[in-house]
Length: 211
Ligand SMILES: [Mg+2]
Image (tube, rainbow, N blue to C red):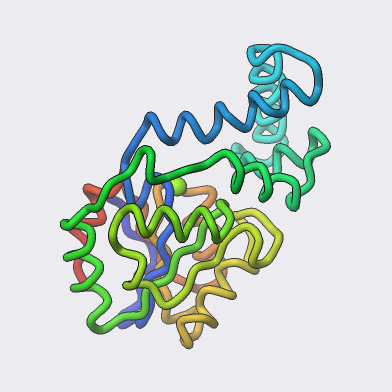
């Protein structure tokens, strides 16, 4: 776990969802694979060819953007899939309840953190998928706000979803700490907004968050 620019006192935690509130490599891989499969069918090529084209595009993008990573949503735009289409695909393809189950330890952690702080989720998945995910984990009622891909129609890293989450929590961005498992998606942008950041390896790190 790595901490960045933690404010002296803060009032809200903005959590990434996938890879942060749960650790499940099989489900994470399914999410990427199912999207690539659908895109491959649409473009009339094999899964492997599509996967290779996506990896090549992301690699080139990183080389021209100081090594930063591009989200899958923003990558799909390059391949002709709008953010709106991307939202529909994810809503149709993802059933978190198949992969995830209630996590009492996460519930206890969030209950503890939420006693004095607002809690929000900022995810590149649609709000519907986020609601299903949080319900499967048994923690849906502990969050004041959910910001998904369909809330601002932009994919992280972008200021809009983080500022929206701060607003839903009723606090200044300067009083927020963003928690996530990918520095480029969840930490770098919030830091530029004056938020704090905590990079985690998975939900096991979230269990150890202290105020
Ligand atoms: Mg994540």
